[in-house]
Image 1 (cartoon, rainbow, N blue to C red):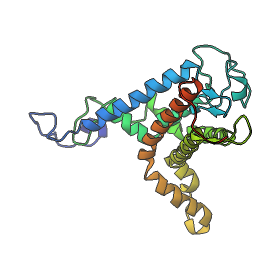
Image 2 (cartoon, rainbow, N blue to C red; image 1 turned 120 degrees about the horizontal axis):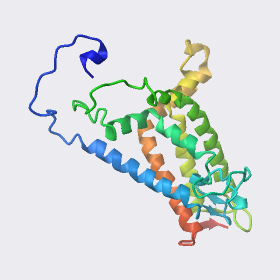
Image 3 (cartoon, rainbow, N blue to C red; image 1 turned 90 degrees about the vertical axis):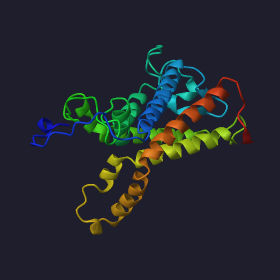
Image 4 (cartoon, rainbow, N blue to C red; image 1 turned 135 degrees about the vertical axis):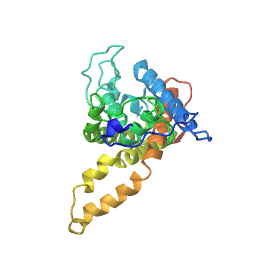
Length: 267
């Protein structure tokens, strides 16, 4: 940012022979972020369009990448909300939910900071200049659309309810009630997804952001304090849930594809 960008007549910056005086490995953070996000995007894109190995009918294991499964190509038992989208290679089976989940994460306050610094180098690190000559923030299209993050939060909460239902009805086997390693993975995944969703800054604002007197709203204040505790771990939960989503999907894909058998404890 320059003096012309801020409208303040600031003194010129000191001329240095190097871009930054930092001697630590400041580039490690942005590099790891690029690597981590790239791995998830490539894996998730492949799985979303693979349209196979997403459902284990005997135990009703449905990967979160395909929930809710609303395509005409979905296995009937996996479609709890009907099949009404056309079966086409370019249309994900969960096209009703995936765009909202993607936009929820894409507009997330933490992820915005992560990919601004790593992919756009804006800025890549503290005390490291960015390559952009002008700074406009999130005041112009398309970045101004980041401000509707709270509406994607509502959609993500609905999808989390559906994922929770998927995890509950998965406690079955061909003989009735059943319990296996897949159930553990599904339950842990959905619990972490709820933690990430609830720890969202928009959720914190919805619960207590507009309250002027906490003493008059003791229940909402209690909820706000608990969400605030989770909010302090929002960055960690953002990364953990990327990992658990891939792990959950990968395990179900292996079982659905017949590569391994589910480790059963009951049934």
